Image 1 (cartoon, rainbow, N blue to C red):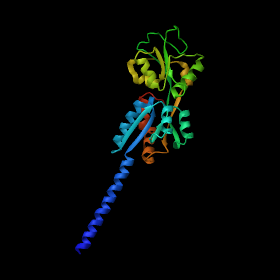
Image 2 (tube, rainbow, N blue to C red; image 1 turned 90 degrees about the vertical axis):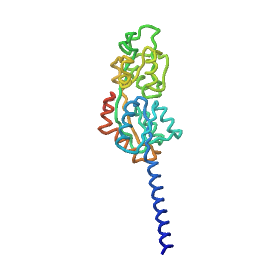
Image 3 (tube, rainbow, N blue to C red; image 1 turned 45 degrees about the vertical axis):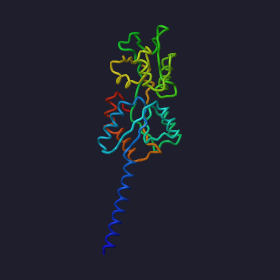
Image 4 (cartoon, rainbow, N blue to C red; image 1 turned 45 degrees about the horizontal axis):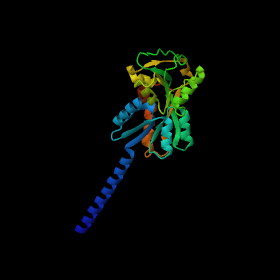
Length: 253
């Protein structure tokens, strides 16, 4: 009887140990969701990540922000991530065509360009076309990223060549050039101008209406926990996500 009882006890410990190991493995693979998001989403996604963690105990949301095209390049080279949020549909289409996306992307926000200047607009910039003075410096995004593609459309609509002194890889880099005094003006999203507060003066221009970018989000094919990744995508596109995005100045898609 003692031998039988001992064997049973050993078996029970082994079963419990196996169960605990199994549960631990499931938790470690499912308690983190890595999100690659366009640079212009930094403020709202940081808040949404914190809120998602609060409503999903034990979950860690890891956020990586950069120009959308740069993020797709990283993903194509094997960078690990679960969710991708792009600043335009063209870049998301590249991700889809490269086989990086699982399921259909969902559009969740829209954004529009504005001119930003130093506080008080000392150069008196009033429009996209009004550029008197050869020494005025302007910075924009490179054409390959969404804010740059939108800038090119706005230039075409206005019939102007901005002749920028530099082209940046992300909209936050453009904003940084203006806030640091390295440029007189830059083209950024209205949300970036809003986030910058009194560090810049925003100058709306009518041609921006024809250069609106819509933002799609998708679960990635390589997602370690597709269910958790889908939950985050649904959270962003749901009522709470919409509220946070609207507060940051994003329009509904």
